[in-house]
Image (cartoon, rainbow, N blue to C red; front, top):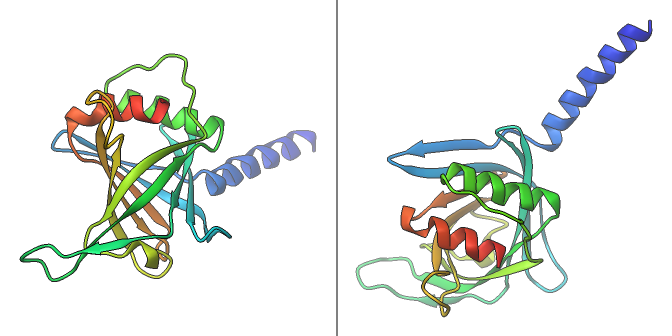
Amino acid sequence: MKYLLGILIMIWSVFSSAKDYPEVIVGEEDGFVDLTFTISNSKKLESGSYQVVVKGNLKGDKVGFAIEILPSWNPHAVEGIDDAFYWGEAFFRNTGSESENFIKSLATLYGATVNDVSVPEKVYAQVVGLACNPEKIDELPCKMKFFFNPDGEEDLYSEVFINIDTVAKELEFNEKDNDYRAPLLRSLLQ
């Protein structure tokens, strides 16, 4: 009886962990590393910002982070394109040990190593909504490009695509350029 109870508890813990930390899909095509997360929570905050939290199992590690989309977005027309590009701001937010694990796992996928991982509470990014208005992120999918340290030193400047679909509960963290790998890691650890 104790043996059977032990097996049932073990099976329950595996399925419970899979629900709380769904598998992160890793795409490695044409030399790029692209990650697809299941959104665990998304909501509008009292400040007017919109927060998206992801947690997942990335090659055996429990990883996670939050993205906070700030509320003010300015449309800018682009010649030859029907839809405006919306400029605004966001934060990459630390969610604890899961964020540290994310940076370590990302470094491994990028073929880099990081020591003494200490993720700040939040990391600022300038953001452009690519033919989408991030103010409507709770209604429509939005593809965005995040610029970390846009006014900073060149060794910290980096870009990454973050696509969010709150209806489908997916967040994609897609590499923009391999040359941004080291600066992106430094930016997220700043």
